Amino acid sequence: KAGVTQTPRYLIKTRGQQVTLSCSPISGHRSVSWYQQTPGQGLQFLFEYFSETQRNKGNFPGRFSGRQFSNSRSEMNVSTLELGDSALYLCASSPWTGATNEKLFFGSGTQLSVL
Amino acid sequence: GESVGLHLPTLSVQEGDNSIINCAYSNSASDYFIWYKQESGKGPQFIIDIRSNMDKRQGQRVTVLLNKTVKHLSLQIAATQPGDSAVYFCAENRNTGTASKLTFGTGTRLQVTL
Image (cartoon, rainbow over all chains, first blue to last red; front, side, top):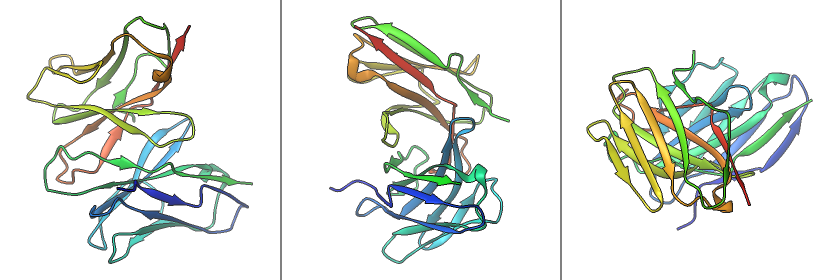
């Protein structure tokens, strides 16, 4: 089974631009979560999607948004980029069986650099 | 603020020795804990997990201990190998009703010396 796939692997943008990142979950997984990873803040939860609906959201400004398609693939968008948005953006999927001990499977991430 | 924290940012261990990585959490409602390993250029990889109704769980060369009294979690790696060099994160599920929302610690870098 293929793992979680994220594209692109690296991205360089300038302040004020917007960016779209893509994530393909493991086949059969219906829940997709996004995390931002920075050296200073570590891994922080952005949002989670299930059945094309945002089910949970972290404490990030409205510039960060996402969506999920009917095939469970997900995209996240960051508008009006700021220097502080430079980070590794990680996507994780899980099968969502309803149990509270579900494991998350992570992709390798998209490294975003904002200049 | 961060409620899942790590005591040491970097741990240096000699090959063959045992490693112990610690983690503190503050939310007594957390009922599920996970340890992840992240190697350079990769996403976090699941190592081992433990439910709050357990004190100890063992895997292959790894053991997780949970002390709910002091809200402390530890990961023990036996006979540490060079391939164990990575950043290790603890994470907790605060039973929000959504299994996939985890709160991660800041991470401990494990360096294995020869």
